[in-house]
Length: 122
Image (tube, rainbow, N blue to C red; front, side, top):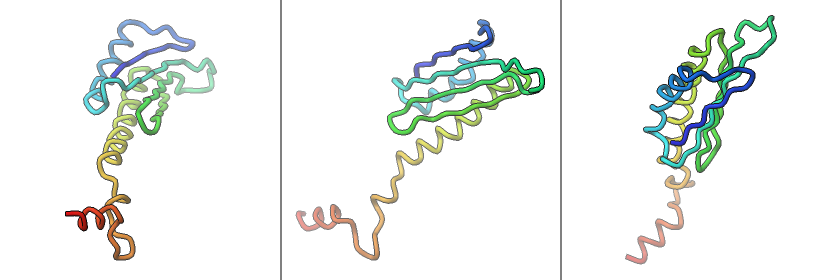
């Protein structure tokens, strides 16, 4: 997993960068080595918004692009919630890639064509 941490309207300190890398490292176990993950940390400058610390992430997979956004008053809490949301999305993505029921089920009591042809050729 290739991780890129960016800041928008906020300086990304080494401690915040290390915290984000450590939290997102557990996603690396489920993603391929060449998967690009971009995390953008920002601050909304509107004083009427209590949840001003925003963490957004984009995961570029072979299939769909996974995105998540979280906003809380604390940047570390935003990162924690973002990682939880991305973890659920990645698990769902991995399950869908391994189990493709539409390719292996019978339709109206008839087996798929590829299965019949293989059975005849053996």
